[in-house]
Image 1 (cartoon, rainbow, N blue to C red):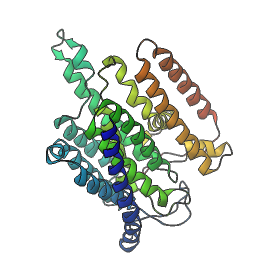
Image 2 (cartoon, rainbow, N blue to C red):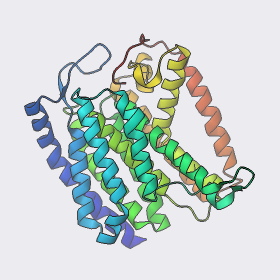
Image 3 (tube, rainbow, N blue to C red):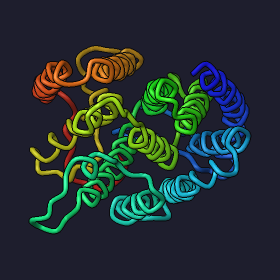
Image 4 (tube, rainbow, N blue to C red):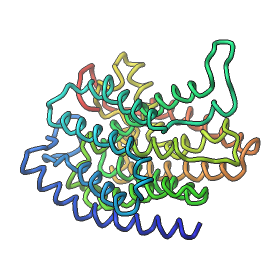
Length: 357
């Protein structure tokens, strides 16, 4: 395990340095090509902000992976590379106003999910424990369907999580850190390397993205981080755990985007709005600010929630069933209570419209 940790540390450092160098360059390029996010009534920034942060994170990650991953390992990651490139390009075109925003959800995200599943990146829960001969459906196909929903859901969740300085990138860093720790203990070298690379790339970027931000990820960057986070979560393996319990670990690690998306979806549906086509200041962080917190404080609370989720994931991984079931019950009850409470918090309620969330 020590050799894996050392390897991951080197990968982290290279990605961090590459991102720290590439981010200001991407910022300058965004100003030159006028790829900017202009202020608006439902945005928290007051000046035009460059939107090419995702390009810096992408290039830093690709560079670090190329340095540390062997040709054989690279072939295993080829599907992820294709999917990540597609996500970044489509997201950047959307930021440029060259695509209808619904293309991402209706066409790109399903295509990305199919690419990943087709290159052996899918869950392994049901095919290990169940087959459904009554309907002629083997458990593996349930895994494919579950993975399809997982990829689309997490990518979309990160896409709408990028609404406050440092929130999306910081959340991705926390997710990557916990995934890296699980992979190191489990002896998953490639998964650990990828997690370490994303951790380094996001932290190098955060120096420029923390409040007051000087560059944004852009939609391509936010979806890129969602794509990698979903992949890390689905590739973690826990041989000592029952497959019916191991799925809890990535869910807990990714609690922040899952919780925020659940809150926004339920809230907007209650008001007769389309969840991913009705932008507004109704996210978790916005509601915390409405309670009197600063933006930095609201983001800090969500960082804390992400760390708590990761800690609970470790407890589940260590104790396993049935001892881990009270944690699950606590998590479900706490989530419901928090959702109900935050929905009662006064916040800016938007009307039906289309655009970024």
